[in-house]
Amino acid sequence: MLTNDTDPIVAIATAPGRGGIGVVRLSFGRAGEAAALEAMRALCGQPLAPRHASYVPFIDGNGEALDRGIALYFPAPHSYTGEHVLELQGHGGPIVLQLVLQRAIEAGRGFGIRLAEPGEFTRRAFLNDKLDLAQAEAVADLIEASTEAAARSAGRSLEGAFSREIHALVEDVITLRMLVEATLDFPEEEVDFLEAADARGKLARIRQRLDTVLADARQGALLREGMSVVLAGQPNVGKSSLLNALAGAELAIVTPIAGTTRDKVAQTIQVEGIPLHIIDTAGLRETEDEVERIGIERTWGEIERADVVLHLLDARAATTSEDAAIAARFPQGVPVVRVLNKTDLAGTPAAVHEGDDHAREVNLSAKTGDGIELLRGELLKIAGWQAGAESVYLARERHLIALREARDHLAFAADHANQQSQVLDLFAEELRLAQDSLNAITGEFTSDDLLGVIFSRFCIGK
Ligand SMILES: Nc1nc2c(ncn2[C@@H]2O[C@H](COP(=O)(O)OP(=O)(O)OP(=O)(O)O)[C@@H](O)[C@H]2O)c(=O)[nH]1
Ligand SMILES: [Mg+2]
Image 1 (cartoon, rainbow, N blue to C red):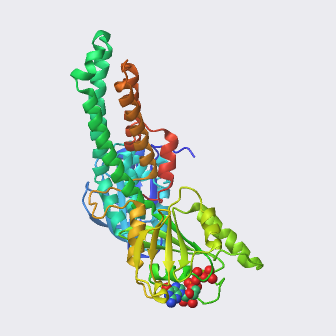
Image 2 (image 1 turned 90 degrees about the vertical axis):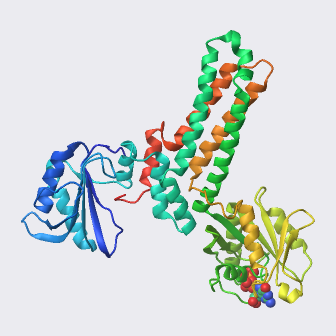
Image 3 (image 1 turned 90 degrees about the horizontal axis):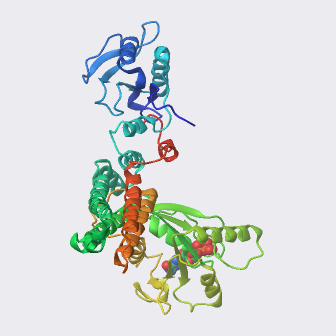
């Protein structure tokens, strides 16, 4: 849907449900100050001093108080959206907030107010240069953060840490581009140019810097998205026991009966702030049982989608042809960790090592918990997590894609610079493309479609 970015808008800004305080927010768009004054008179019975907390009744059409609370008026441009904004902080009940909202719509009919769409306040903040696109996304990520690490790194992005890195990279690319473009006008100097201006050295430093940003951003994306870890193996090897051990709760049913788990059981756990989506599945074997067969089909479906597969085996038994057949069906390119479970029965110590085929192997006991730490460590390693990385900022898949694009363009530029017949205009073109990719992150040049996608995922009122 096409939004008009200048309409006056209103929404309940606090979460649905009951709470101490509930906020109704109005942003007046093109209707501006006149509309703000009209709304203040209609809703609060008086004009309000800018940025002062006024304790007033919120009144209905008959002058009766619906609620009483704090009203705040933020004249443009010093507001969240950059427009004239009125905030009514009343009591946090769903009905009373609905009444205040309806009253705001009624009072704003004259100047065309409408309900805000999801993320529309933040979209305006972006359009009015209050936030860049990466910061606007960080607002949503901060609200959605499910771990402390994710919240802290979203906070850093919102403060502009990520955007500053991107801007610094763009600045460096621009400086190099200016050098090149200037030389393009004097073709006879082309050959000397790369030497004289240390263009190759400059490019190499930019590429190095970009790699660091990309590594940090990858960590950030991990904090946001997490990793799905599928437990697979023959019946009775202890998959459900391992899920329970990792989660620290009796989530899945554990019995000595082979074929206990039929349907998948999933639980998200946090390891060093990284969400790991652990999925316990039906044991893999030939079966006549219709229900179990469907469960096994689903197991394979989960394995196809996994970021990591934990192949569980019994530490007491030699690897069987069934185990080999299971391993052969694992999808290419997905990391697999072999977990040799029940070390307490096998009488072997907990350990982690590399198997004959270079796959990682962890010996542990889901029952005693011995070795579970080693498995957590392996999972973090696969995730590429660097412990103690303080500077991580929350990033999204979109940012990673743009950073990788920029990295590739810079690599092409380096190729051009290193060829015998240095093709300066191609060198310049790759730099320009790299700059475009970086700019897309902060939203300097971003299509309307992308904005629509990004902001529609926000909650209403934000
Ligand atoms: N001693 C010991 N017993 C274990 C261990 N892990 C699992 N078990 C036992 O092995 C049996 C099977 O465990 P489950 O966790 O249900 O195995 P599963 O792989 O989920 O089995 P299915 O759901 O049938 O595929 C249960 O009796 C568990 O108590 C372990 O580390 N040590
Ligand atoms: Mg099970």
